[in-house]
Image (cartoon, rainbow, N blue to C red):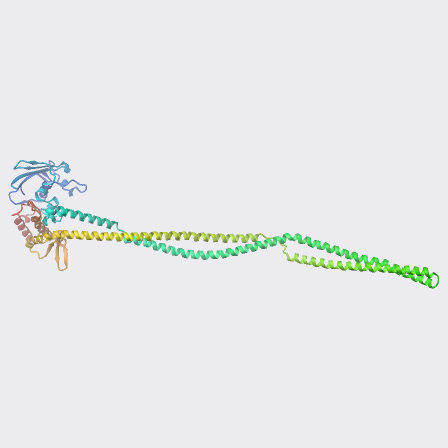
Length: 566
């Protein structure tokens, strides 16, 4: 492909501007602010269009950035030659891609195409806009190259395997996304340790509870002993109270018995006195009568002796007196014996009653006749209730702590189950990540194996261009198109080099890529103030390389510094 001319109706600062491409090397030299960068982006936009306007800083987006300053139709056309036929591509841009106008005319045949399913640049050059931008398009102060699978496919000569490479890339992307998803979801060791810490805290709490329960059980045992003692004291107090109450109730009965004994003793004493009195009365009458009878018997005897009285009458009279005396003595002594017996019996009874009375008195004295005091029972009962309450309180505390202990044990069991599950899940996820890493490694190795086929030739072409600058440094391009400087200490990214060296390295890298990427049709190479950071010696080498490359490629060289003019 070769551009013949172009016309800018309105694009950025440019207005009604025409440019003829009479040579492979077209040089545009103007001061800053003329619109040189607008011209370079106009050419790219004609072939690839402009992206949709996005939110944010409008200066960063081409559709907003190059909106005509002076108004009017936004766009223009380019005429180019391809396979001995001449074409004109016309584009006008609106606020959105839907408002754009596109037309491709084959000026040789007159055929018009207004439907652009694939950007024209991609059809012509065989690469998309991104690949064009990082190879043949050198934007001002930012022309570092890059890597994509479109370029990799061209470099490896694997265009016909592009679908497979795309599938590999899709697979790699899917695998990496899956790996990243698992890594984001994987259970962290901190989470497991956190649960283990919870288990340890619960175990510590259980140990504390065990100590508290042990202490409470000791208290419970002590209180139970005190409770048993209080029960015994209460039972003893009740027994004593019942005994006192019983004795108190028996007090009247004992008093009645004692009074009955006193009455009985009094009665016996009275009988004894009576018996004693009855004995003295009979002696007073019986003895005189007996004496009288004896006197009469003597008188009668004397009378009979002296013959004053007949012996028969005297004998009868004396006999009668003797009989009467005998009877009187018999009666006297008979009654005396009975009275003596009665007196003895009464004395025995009196002694017995006195003894019984004394026993009753002794019993009466032994019995505590104090009124039973229920307050002692109440006091012991209060003590018992207080101890029972304290015992129940301790028992309840033990139950609560045992419940807490059971809850902690259940939580520990659940956490241990959870930790085991988390560990197992983590191990499974780590195995998955390992397998994914291995799969990704093998796929990338396969991709690298394909890419290695073009790395060596690419480095050879890069070195051919780079060595012209005479820099005593060794740079190498890897299969991802990353550039490293080889040093005695190892490799380091070329980003650590000076800006001038980075510009030279990127310039050489791009030029080495162009012949390998654009195998379908040669693109126009656009350089916009590419060498402003080079010193005079490096600039001279770079300009000679540009002139040399213009023998094979059409080049638009734009600069604003007279030092950089070719």
